[in-house]
Image (tube, rainbow, N blue to C red; front, side, top):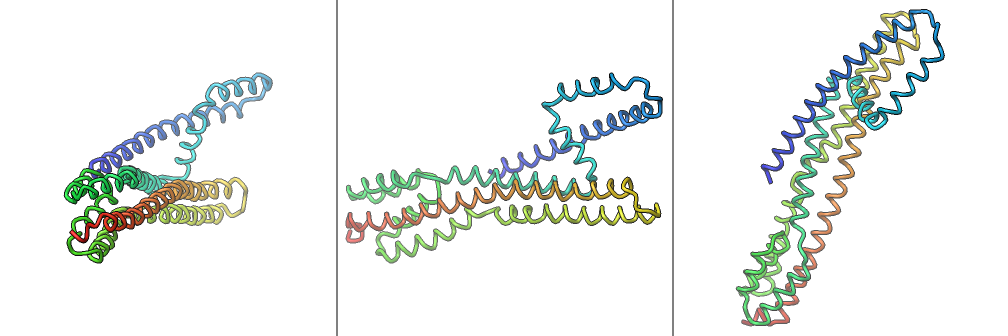
Length: 276
């Protein structure tokens, strides 16, 4: 699982680097298009009719990749100083979320079938066979039931105590990595707000240097400043949705663990395991 986590990080950084290079190429093409539009505005407008038709055709043809192109352009406009840390938060946070989702899906077991197989072995008086069933089953529930069966000779109190103590250990393993996900959820909007504040300061510096409050001077700086907040909030929303899914998944596994531990005690009492 650690190798998968490292592979996800490497792939994320590689895709981020390629997107940045493509974004820079797109920025160069945008600057060339702006120069051509400036020269066209400088020339006398002798042909006003054909220009709208020529502009409408490319929009219809490139409508499929328009969303990604706009997102890439806005990412460049926000500035790499704050956009890059926000993107890193997204990549690392997604890597943690994917690792937790895969681990939790592997950890889920059918407790009813597991208890039924344990009950079959205990009816035969084969405690070792019930322990082998728990060993061959993946997930924290099977590990907890194995710890309970291992201490069956010491009485029901020892079984219950071992289940509770080992259950707390399994809870810690299930919640591993959630602290980092919550950190990136809080860090991404903070970086966005920081970029907005810095951008607003730069916008006011431009106003002070220009000597007047013109819309062209103010609007550009404020737009760039607010883009960092937009991207930071988007990253936080994505990670928050995945975080809530992970938490609900952990809660369902914990509930199954508790039900299975209670069911194990009932099965052991019904089959007179403590008397043997």
